[in-house]
Length: 66
Image (cartoon, rainbow, N blue to C red; front, top):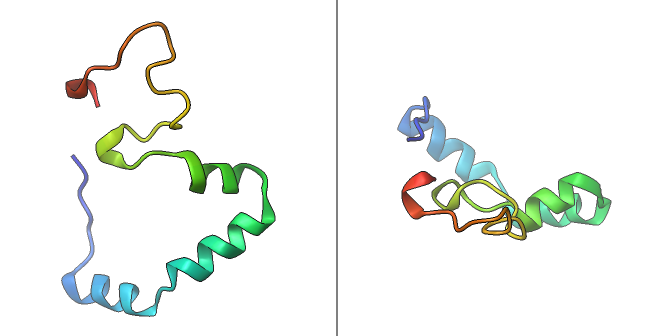
């Protein structure tokens, strides 16, 4: 379970000010772990793991364990 402790107004303000395309392009151009994280880490509902590690640790990862 994820719980975000922001008001609806604060969240709307942050979303209005953000430019995810510009931010990810800048970070990706720098390389390293940050680029790897942006490009390869799965979202929370998928387990927050690197996509290339899922199911590679000796057994399947059941959906309910995420």
